[in-house]
Image (tube, rainbow, N blue to C red):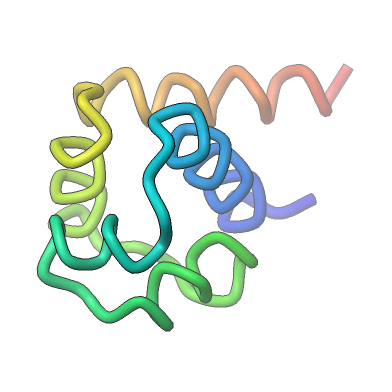
Length: 78
């Protein structure tokens, strides 16, 4: 599994844990809903700016968001 796919899975989990729809998350981040969908499906790679925007909207620090992705990658590598 590639990093962008894992990022997408973590993004979806965090969004759902916060009970936020893709539409609302997109609105909070000033992004298009289809872009959020593409991120969650691992079809687009986020910029650092996007990581900061979605992290803020999901009430998590960007570093904690990236750490969650990193830990998931390590889990899958074992």
